[in-house]
Length: 450
Image (cartoon, rainbow, N blue to C red; front, side, top):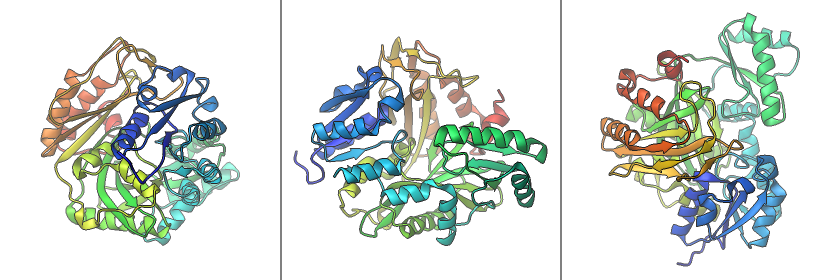
């Protein structure tokens, strides 16, 4: 099968997302190149790509984050495009610039947009000017603790400290009163410096019991932009998502149209082109606020694919090849309900990582179940990388059916040799408040205290 998209795509990632991109490329008739560290020599993405190149030792800094090694792998295999997946280099404006300089297409937005939306303060300013409501807060703060305390007092406690260059819950601390500020500030800045290379932080008014709801955007290089509805991401621990669903029980069709159209117009205002996600907080009074934009494919993208019927990775690739979107906003109809559970190699009580060898692996296989994974029996969960084993996604004609299928899928799923979060996911699914859709970002702390 020939294609007019790319000669060959290198996937600058590992695990299930690398496999996901390989599947999309194969359906589009595009040969693929896997890169891997020495620890991932026996991984499935290495086996199923058309070519594979070892790019370094197990440590991420010496392999998957080693930009010269990734670019060299693309050059020696004659690839003309790179898909970064999520994590690692996916939101690196510098990496996107290097790709451009080397004549490689970065399958994602432009370096300028990545840099703009990656700076949370600049992003807030741009989105405010684009008409999105912003959580009351500050621009980037630098200076003595007294200055931060003064600003926090003006906003009003509780406040949340966030890393200006951050994401994924890193460099984030909730502060209930001024007496907690010094410790929280020190921890947030230390973590921000370690994770993002800068201790810069900013403050926002903290909204308790909020709903975390994000909108999926697709935008091409020709001024066309659509949204694909929302994903409910309120079930979290330590600001990391555990379970996602689409659509959300919170949004009415009218509110979905209002926020989705605003998000699409805001993406257009910054010349966005690719798949992207606008994240919002909704309070208990019907107000909503822009939080941030993720300029990549999301871990939880499968739930959107199931309720819309669109392949988001294929759409990313077509957009990067400068093709026009084939769908208008009127074409997008949400059908049914989808739920995703992230299964991690972690102790379900403490969330401590549990690396080791999977001695038995049996995925659920019945109608309405999708499994995104790179795991298999004898696969080793490495301590060097994220502990994600699999994403179990179920689809139903309604939410109740999707939940029932997920309960059955988790009951049938066998993962032996390492501890997993399956028992915790089962407790969440059986909880009355979850089943009734009464959820918020502190659901886990409230109902399953550690």
